[in-house]
Length: 160
Image 1 (spheres, rainbow, N blue to C red):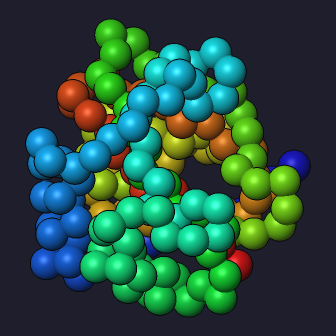
Image 2: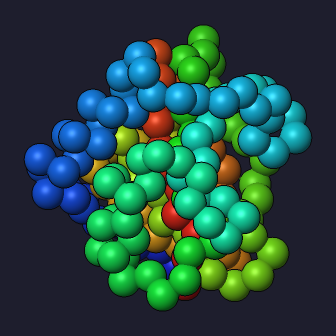
């Protein structure tokens, strides 16, 4: 089965992206421990900007709302940042879909590294800062950790 996807480089204006990047890479941004992404892929950190049908972060209004508008989203299901730590080898999560219902998934890569997103049909999407990947929820995908940078940060948007 062939899955459709779209990549948009330089998705956000430079100043807006840099402001968000500086925030998320600062030592004051709150990250929360998660034991695994799927089943067997190890721990990671997350930050829920929007969860359970409501904003869940003090940063939502100032940093995320304008991105949702840029996506032309009519409804938001979840917005979450994921932080993967450097590994000695690439570790791939299980293939998964983010939601059991139809919507779109957009991944905004916050930094360039040698980690990537693998689509089920073996297409590798490189992690390049300020690039947006859009897939639909029927597209199984996996996160692959990096070996070259301390952190790999992605913001995951699930929306219609």
